[in-house]
Image 1 (cartoon, helix red, strand yellow):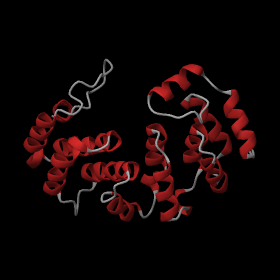
Image 2: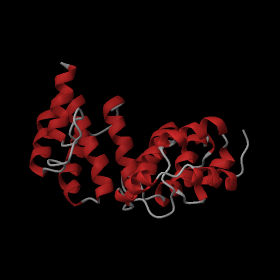
Image 3: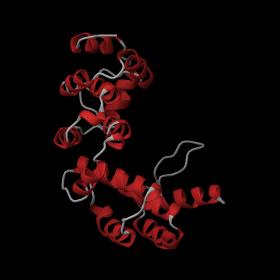
Image 4: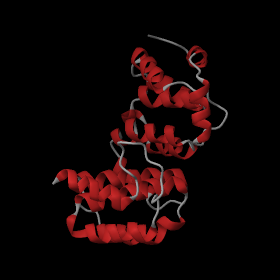
Length: 223
């Protein structure tokens, strides 16, 4: 299915939902959005299929839904490191950043090089992406990761980190506690001492992002 960027934007606008729009605004989206349900974006992506150049053009619109769609139809392997770095740094809405992380960054061949760069940057969204990759690496392939050094950084930096960075830094803390018993006690102690997300509202049936609760619940399920 071929559609131009203009046709896609018109289609997205026709799918606008005011409740979704209001929800997006509440969680940090700007005005360049329509408020389209995630399911509708996924349905459109399936029709468009992978289209790298279209994805790049959609991203350049800056529109929330167009960028979400772009993450689903882009070919990560065709992006240069500079292009992906620019994409990460150009987005401030967490929903788009999360889809970019899940569908593009995690599939990027040179993501480890970018992870190392992003772990040292002052840009909040790049740092957020770096800690997100680190969280996954801690859980699935921790070879070469200095976990005590990570815990040192988390203990010092997380209390003063921007909210965007706190979220994925906290995920790293939790994954250390869940997957590495030797460091569990320290991870729990750091989480308790910092208290970040202690009072975070959590829906029924969901696990709190407060690291000690998260760690203990996941360990209980494993056991």
